[in-house]
View 1 (cartoon, rainbow over the protein chains, first blue to last red):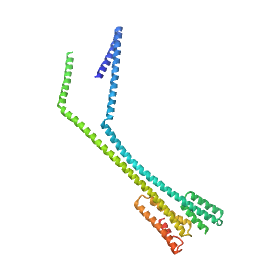
View 2: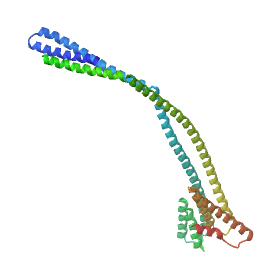
View 3: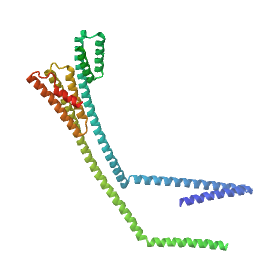
View 4: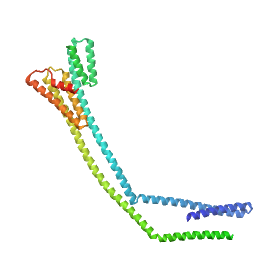
Length: 175
Length: 178
């Protein structure tokens, strides 16, 4: 209804302005000025009404949206969705926590293994170096140096198998 | 002008007739429309209630799941802690094995005792890293057999004197597995 009134006012305003234009052309300037004033006022009122209608529609929509958002139905739907998502995230969290525990366990075990390896390497290298020093006179300086370097390199690389091979090699060399 | 007036009147009549027809139809189907609306409202309410019930059930399930996960994680933590403890004990046992070899076979080159120890450690690591239970058991048996052989040979060596200068059975086992 309001839209109809606003549109009628708008058309009347246009009609007034056109009439004023015609009257102006026919040299009825006094009458024309009056009609222009009426047209302007009608135009202003129609625009004000249109703006009011737009504002009312927006306000109405916003209010309805807010009411719908806080309605029981929507609240239940949101709660249900939230719980579904939480369920899913819990599953994923559990899976990742399990993986993390496994990973930490493997790291701890690897550290133990590496520490023991280092300890064994150091012990064997020490034995080898002592043996090498004891038989220094039986070996040429270059061979002695070569063995020494090899032992130190194997120790740095924590290569116990290589140290074992080196001792076998040294024993063969000495006998 | 008269024709135009007649046309307008005819149009008006048509419009009014349509409106009257529409009103009649509405009057005739009013009860059905009301019933339909009520059914719709009822269905919506029912759906809402069902969703609410499901939501409550889900909340309950969530609580159960959290408790279950917490318990499972605690069990897993204990299991891993025990796992590390066992591994340490195994490493300690292997160290003792090496000392036992070194004490028994004093003429044995140090490298050999270390090689035996290294082999046992490799077996242990393989056993620990295997996911397949059957293979794990096989490797465990292999490791146990290896350790028993080493201990047995050391014991025999100490008891019966130097018949063999080397732990031959142990070396044969290493050779076999290589």
